[in-house]
Length: 314
Image (cartoon, rainbow, N blue to C red; front, side, top):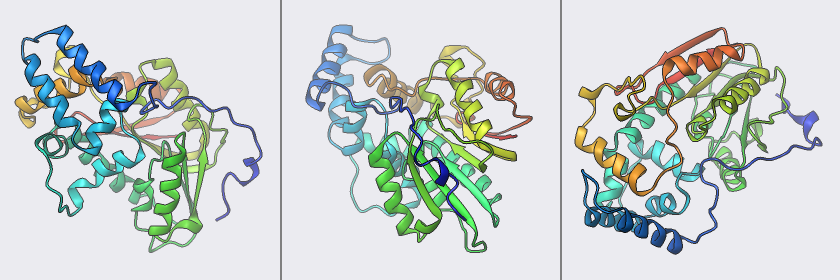
């Protein structure tokens, strides 16, 4: 199948900023010191001491993923792929206590690992000859590249991201899976896709959870709607509000370890102030999708009901 964007290669596209892991002005060392100072100046919290928070911060600084979270407050394509693929990958390295917690116990990480499998299952159902899939932000595009295309020959995969490093890694990944002839990659802004009726399926995870402005999320959904063919589907996700927010919480608390949930809050919110702390209810997400024109919206929940998968049909 010819590239779906061959005619657009000469068009000028305005790039926005990277919501998930844009490089901050401070170095890792400066960011570490700033966080350490914040913890000391804030003092003890009702559920965790200053000493314990500093211990957690030091543990985070001992491994690659933790260092990236400290420096950027989010994850890029490489670390997203590392987290998603961890349950199905053999590991010889011994993890420190904090990395072990993040990859094997943190409730939100477990939920997104489960969500990742749901995504791939739903996408696999839609693999057929002539299909055109887009992933945005694509990261390493494993969501598409790991699908089984053995029964089809005519299909295209398009990866879009604002991170050139992720696009380069995705291109290498396409060669690893022998799909480079079916794959194309674009450095492009999610809010300026410039596609119309081009794709049968668009997949997007890890974008709207960084965007607090509902109007911006609606605008992104509209871009995806415009890029889909009639009858095409949009596979996306969102994070539901935690209990503390008292805002339509749907978390299944008997499926979540409460001590792990508290430690997750301390790490992601209190210490790191991670960028992905934008929560939306199912009702809010449905309304945003339907306001852009999607006629059918299906929700598939993970076990803990934290990170649902959305299948929206044009």
